[in-house]
Each structure stands twice: as C-alpha cells, then as structure tokens.
Figure 1 (cartoon, helix red, strand yellow):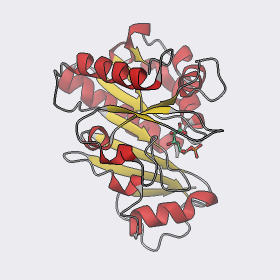
Figure 2 (spheres, protein in one colour):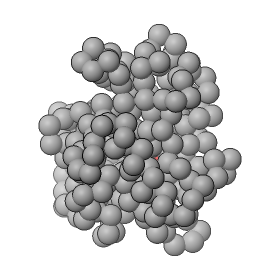
Figure 3 (cartoon, rainbow, N blue to C red):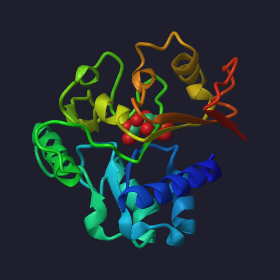
Figure 4 (cartoon, rainbow, N blue to C red):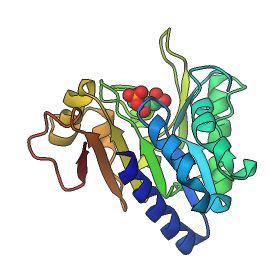
Length: 238
Ligand code: 6PG
C-alpha cells in the first residue's frame, strides 16, 4: 500500500507544482498512515518539499507532545526528516478553546488559499483513513459536522475518553483534486464493504465524493476481504 501511495504522492505533487507552483496536502492521523509517512520520509529528499504545504485533516484538542496528537505523529514520522520549511506546516492551533481553534484553523486555510468569506480550497491531495464505524477525518456517523455547508473546519465534541477535535468538513474533502483512503486490517472489512458496495449512504466515508477530482481506496487484502467486486479505483494490495 505504501509503495502505491508513494507513487501517487510523487505524481500528484509534481503535477501540482507544474500547474500552480506549489503542492498542498492534508494529512490524517491514526495508525494506518504511519508506515507510509516513514517511507515518504526515507525517500523524500527528491520531492519538492520547499513547495509543499502540509495541512491537517483533523486534530484532537491536545498539546502537540500528547501521544494522541496527530501533528505529533505527522511531525515525528515525516516532517522532521524532510527539508520542508516550518512556514509550510499548517497545524490546527490547539492551544485554545475548541470553537476558537476551529475558527482559527479555518482562517489560516482561507488566508493561504486566498479565499475571503466564501469558496472552497482545492487541496491537491487529501489523505484519509476509515474507522470501523465508517467515520473518516473526524466526521462521525450522524454527527452535526456532516451537515456543514459553509465552514471549512468545525469543532467536534467527543465523549471521554476521546478528545474533542477539529476537522475539515465534507465540502472541503469534496473540493480536492485527489482523495486517497488508506484502509488496512480485517476489522475495517465490513465498513469498507458498506462504503464501497452499500448500504453505506449514511456512513461518513461514503459521503465523500470529490466534485471535480477523484477518490481512490487503497486497501490491504484483510480490509478488502468482503468486497465482491472491487471497483476500478480500489487497489487491493498485499
Ligand atoms: C484520526 C482520524 C481518523 C482515522 C481513522 C482510522 O484518528 O486521527 O481522525 O479518521 O483516520 O479512525 O484510524 P486508524 O488508521 O488508526 O485505523
């Protein structure tokens, strides 16, 4: 899975730099992307890091040194090993109250993409995971954030022992050029089947449909074991 994603990252980043002079990626936390981040870090120096801007798909409202911090993971597995300028790292500002953090993150994205009050940023690549309950980013089944139609980032209150979070919204995911879901392990098999083959309409991951881009599912054999007919854009990997 990591090798295929590395090819995708390389191709998308090069095309984005040719098209617009920069490459914008929004990255998830979780277990699944860890080995990809390590691989990207190990192979990274030929990539256009000085023109790469890294954002977060979602973040828990915890300090960066906290074990559950997504930025901590992204930083330790990837960013500290590659020549990316500090100014190109766009983290969710966690050192404030939840709603304020979501608003500040939205403001940062709007400023970067030159959007005033309205309009959607077009990330070149958004890397997503899939939860056993069908959640993606921090968009959980039946949650309020799923109905968002104007905000880029929203606050998500979570019951203990989880942490409150900030997440990009569905319209932002749908505005991307490329959305990649990484799905690994048998415990994701029924969620993946529901998302791809239905009935998954109500599942957050099934609601991600890039308007003018493409979405790709990268799944290992265990996660893909319930799929009857993997669609063209699902790559099942050893
Ligand atoms: C996070 C993400 C979440 C994640 C899925 C899959 O945890 O930071 O919000 O959407 O991508 O829960 O997580 P795993 O990769 O750990 O299975």
